Length: 244
Image (tube, rainbow, N blue to C red; front, side, top):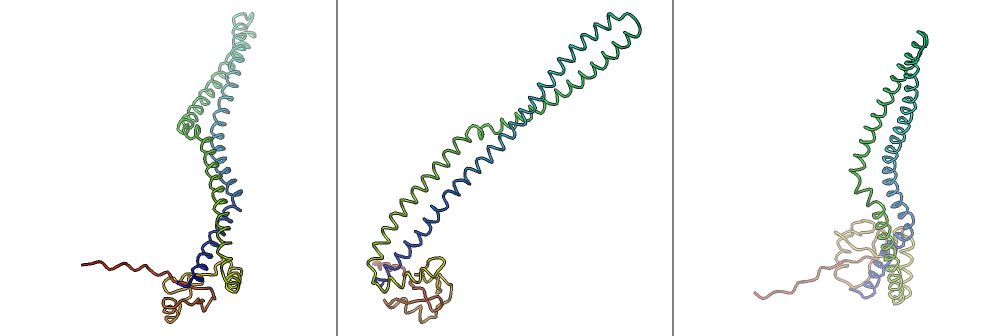
């Protein structure tokens, strides 16, 4: 293969990798925020369940306070009932006693409902205990792993840029200019395209049979007749004949 073409292929592969690395680094802040948001959604769902438990417990405590108050009133009503001096006082105390007993019974039913609600929520929290306990550790690990990935991308990018400079400066000026022009006019930055299945891998145009033969048999640099990108063919290494 033509040595200049080999350099162009290496340059293209390096530039493609550089584009990928730059995109990964440029979008790192957004992708890190998405990781944070995903963990926050999990944390929010956990807090929602815990909030239901806390609300139910608070409701139960308030109901129990009302029951205690009503029992105090009931004790007083019972004393009034026992100490009533006439029929009117007796009937009044009876009505108050009956009303308070009904109210206490209703409140106790609500307490049982709150207790059942708390038990149901506690079951859910028990099922998610491992998730809850490991949530913060998993979040920190995910972010630490992501930061390592970004740092590795930056290190790889620095090396790729250095390699690109070394390869690019060894190209003849005219060839370097052609490469830059082709790469800059292309949205994907592809100036050198591999021929795959007899077609240009950049524009997917089928190459004429004569062009396909020339690519395999000559060392001259050839371009796609459709998109004008520089073409190359990867030849399979020949295996040495084995003695029989």
